[in-house]
Length: 78
Image (cartoon, rainbow, N blue to C red; front, side, top):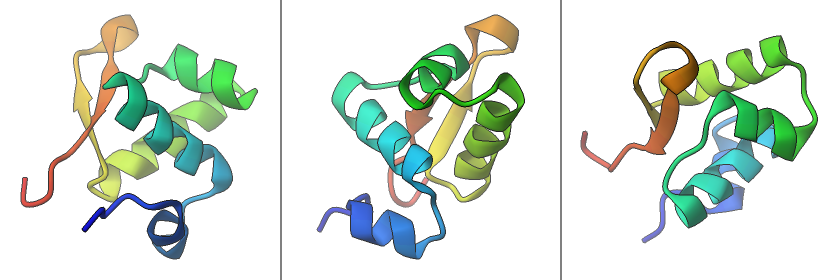
């Protein structure tokens, strides 16, 4: 069963931008803050907060630091 369907993600409290980010990571393997801003048109601070929430909810895993930071999907049970 897919834990990352748009319906399940919305039930977890994610906004449409965050659902888009999860779809992007499923398709491409990862996302950066810059890619997230390009996809959603949100500000740098807004992107940082959205991505931080995805990490706190256990959906994304943070890799790297600073400009080389990428976000990947966490596997269930990690």
